[in-house]
Image (cartoon, rainbow, N blue to C red; front, side, top):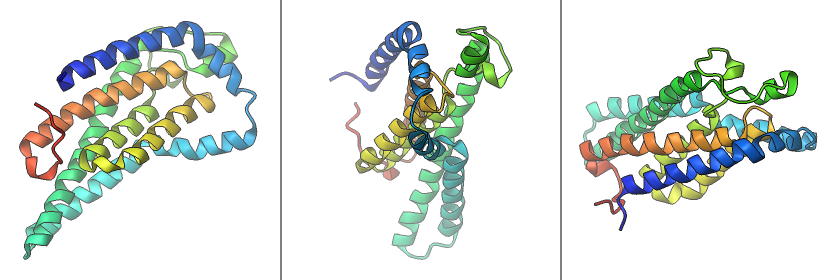
Length: 220
């Protein structure tokens, strides 16, 4: 059985190949395609894209941590202590997963300096320009996609049966970012992979420190 690190590496190679192909063959086509999409579909995209707003995940994680920590201090029963500890650890895990992935994502945005679709449509500007600080030059990786995948994976590590909900969240947000002409497909793939890597290592840290709070994933 391959180790999780090898699986991540293979996923990284596959993501790099897909992003490269998308950059040269699909990214621009996707943007021009979605320019003519029905307004009712665009309205759905506007709802879906909210799932990638980091504020919601950070608030949920932060509140769960604070509530769990406060309840744990005064817990008088084993059941209350059990759930208070998990709320505290799970909340902090979700918060750190999204925050860590988001911080790294923002650094990469500046370094890579990829022009957003709006630049293609208004100035015929496409590609990487490196070390840019304008929001319109920070297309890759997609922040909303990054947050959605980090959130979905964090929830999966906490509750494995949540994977269908996580898949819908991540997929919906990634498609919406392209549909709303905010990102190219390659941007969403890169954001998703970055979230996979950062969330995995955050999970490793939390699992080793709080093994009682996480389901066994069969890692060796």
